[in-house]
Image (cartoon, rainbow, N blue to C red; front, side):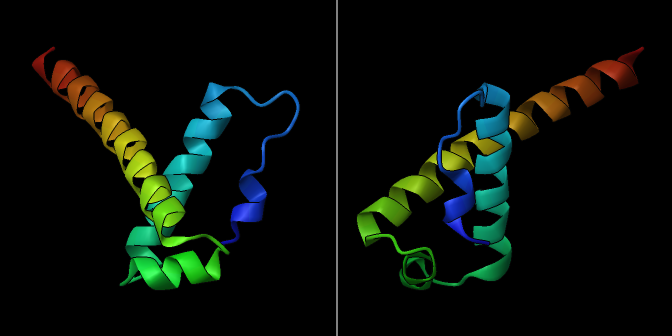
Length: 77
C-alpha cells in the first residue's frame, strides 16, 4: 500500500479519511514488523511513520469500540 493514495483530495470528508487511516493501520499490522521498514516503504521519516501509525491506531480502536457497543446493544434486545 502506498501512502500516495491518502493525499488530500478535494471533496474528501471525515469518513473518507477515517477509512483511509483504518486501511493504513491494517496495512501496518498485517504487513510490517518494524516502523523502520514501514517508514522506508512509504517514504516517511521515523517520526512521521510513528505519528501516522499512532493516529491510525486511534481511529481504528475508536471504530472497534463503536462496533462492540453496537453489538452488545443488539444482543441485549
